[in-house]
Length: 144
Length: 144
Length: 144
Image (cartoon, rainbow over all chains, first blue to last red; front, side, top):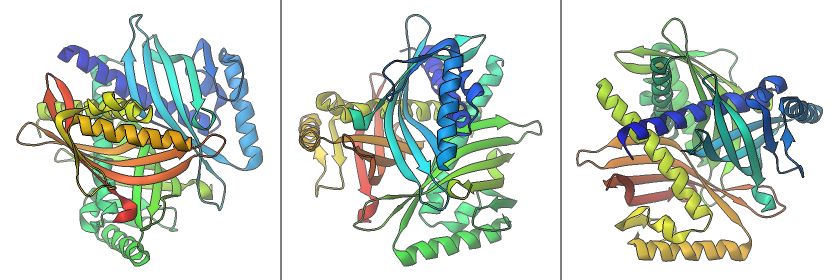
């Protein structure tokens, strides 16, 4: 790989890392609409808990609002923690980002609990200079 | 954002990541004075366990020594693990670094335990080319 | 440090991060030979469970195959999660990469379990432009 290509890969890696820090924090703090806006307008999310992907920002925001409400009802905070990130450019200008994701659950007065161990595969596209998720597939290690 | 500004943000991100790897390792291995020296001379640290921030390197080092001694007495190792880092330049030349922090506790012959799940907000300033923490605020998710 | 040296350090950091994402995923998905090929031909790995380092790709692959088979027999998935990475160039052109490593274990239908908390020190060399591990030393925090 050339030095120029290397630099581009490093740039992508850093930018995706930063994206996840922002995106997961939005979800964890209950900002469902802002979270949904980090997907493309027709973005899809295939979570391990549903038979079909959720598609489009409106449906994504609705799903996130449901999850946020369920956590609030239980008095539980979730932290999505992305790591072991590998980003690869694809021929069509999109990026494939593969990562491991921990979900840590915390209740007031209790110790934190490692709730889920997942893998995440995201296809990113750039619109007006900004990275957006066009397609997300998440698998749970306890359902392999 | 321009490519030049992007590059600066990536640089900051990588440098802060590297800073945390070094700083937390100092704390975890009991080097209280070297850890305190990663703050500015008048740096402050508002931990979740105290009503008032600890201020100044001498007080920071003293606090760290106390924590190190308490862990040694219990025969416990703590590992501070920073992730989900988002770094933003502020108008005054300082950086705001927000992150999630896991504290993992380990005792000889026992499995590791996820001890605390925290958020950390650090204000960094650069002195003689080196990043130092001027202000740290840590919150515990089990006390939200 | 000069800006040029800084840029080189950032590059190394990003490249090693990417290396680990790829290398650990190979191990976690059972690709023993591809995992062994991320070490130099005479690479060594001193795991905490053995009195002597494992040396050479053939022995490394054999060890990995054994570990993979043992996990498969127990129906357990392991995820190696590297963080808190600090990379330093050494005078001879090699890199020293120090990190914390979590091993998370998951069984079907059960919650994930933080299985091991380790430190890893790797010496990397570059061959034909590619980073390879020449020497790996891993310690377990529960055996300190």
